[in-house]
Length: 159
Ligand code: MG
Image 1 (cartoon, rainbow, N blue to C red):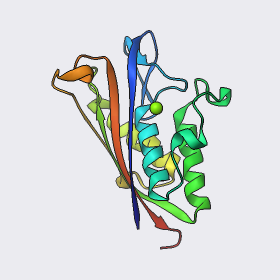
Image 2: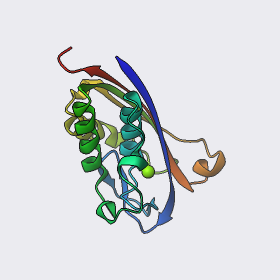
Image 3: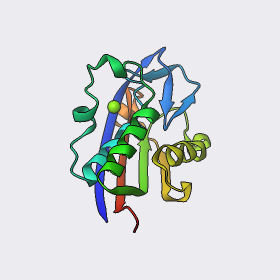
């Protein structure tokens, strides 16, 4: 069993779609990013790559690459799952902590789990997504951005 950690943050700007954990959430602001700026998918991708010492998301999906402009990060996560597989492993479990002041993400976390489980080819019982606010403290607390931390474990295929 191997473990990895991932973190991602994006600035929130008016008029961009808010996509978190593969779910489009109706809101006035969304992440400023080259892709869809899905901090959950990006943090999980980095955690999985980290678990296998495969570098990071920027190595595999360069931010300037036109192929990933406005990209659906769930697709990117599927590519990471393929890299994990090519390295002879499977996703075991994932735990994510998202920090966003508004809107509340709790009503959407069950669907996010489902989307991530599908993308990672893991049972949804092995995917955990939790959301919290920053209690009004700091830039995230002031609504300037959102962030996610993730840890992931992978196991050799067939075990
Ligand atoms: Mg990102």
